[in-house]
Length: 271
Length: 266
Image 1: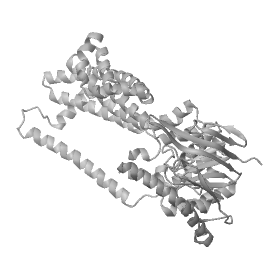
Image 2: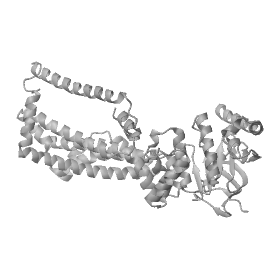
Image 3: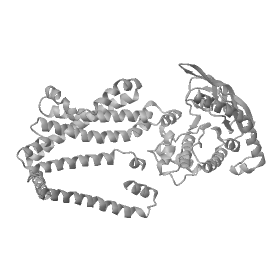
Image 4: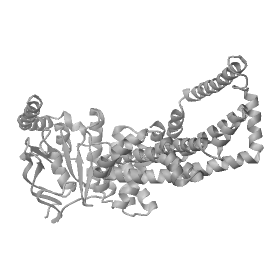
């Protein structure tokens, strides 16, 4: 839908069907959300589950407001936010660099990429004991787990991206006598934006997972720890409120990436 | 008068682990300022190899390529190339695509946009400056690619089957456009094509190449009045040229076909 809209706006001819389609889509989306809420409420009050396991959304909302007003929540949120940000920056930058090296050089790529390829899908949580020994219980081990997690998708995505740059673009660059630096800036970089964006998106999600997992396993601070604490005292509405908060933040991060890491023009929306 | 482009005994052998494949026998050719030359030949006759040598994308070869009497090797700013494949940058608008070589050459923004706008107008795309390639048809994109190469103001324009991916009608109309450009700019042009009618319609001379190893079988002077257009194609003389070229080409093309089928079955 968004694609149709954008193309229509750009070309200055708005197909008559577009606004109608927009409203249909919006209505269906709202309806889906309403249905999910309704199912949640019905399941919660049905008596099939232990009471309190699926609290009503109103209770969760109340807990959510309570969280937002408490200082300790913001402390935990700050810890997790810092960890994720650090893990993301470290993992993404090292991943991008590794991807560039692997993609640009056929031999390093052939030698090392299989390692990356097969390591990438292994759950990084298995590294946690080593990281705990290396960095101790605390921010260091959590950041490193997050960073390792998002290193892989970024490196693989960029390496594939470098190799998939359309060779005809490079020929065009050669016939125009581009310098090496110009070739990177005017051809490789824009051509790499889509793989970089997808690396960022996957990397963000996976670095959040990495940090939260280590918080849940062994930690004294952070949102993962705090959710587990609420679980321990069986304050399910607060636990769910923490999860909702994490979900909203992750989604917001994705929106930011989609919005700003993209090529100009409608072709990116289509890709 | 020195020719703009002189191809002197240019030959090429590709080396593979199994030995050499002779792609081009020595070829010599002089091209005058403003002349339009087509090279036509069966698949595998080395015409693209010749073009890549002249354009500088292949740097290892025998013989010499001279522009205005000076030998050149490697990509040269006096020689512009248009490729068969889709080559417009999808992340750039039409005007920014055309301005690309000027941007690389450090031409100030205002000036390069002005120049790009003129060229878009020349290829009949005024009004489409801010469109992205994905919003345009294949023929329009290829016109952008031509304008982009012209922006570099090459003395010699090389085109490697630029219309091969387009449908017949678009191809004819683009041929008219190319004729018009060539007349307006007095642009020296070398075109590689499979299409006999296209070669006759556009060219002053048509070079017929043999199947591998490629050499020039015959040069046909096309003595049709200019300015030309696709309307030419109904004429009797036009038909004679097409028939004569096909006569020469048929044997070579069937050799190519046999070899390919032989490779498939053998």
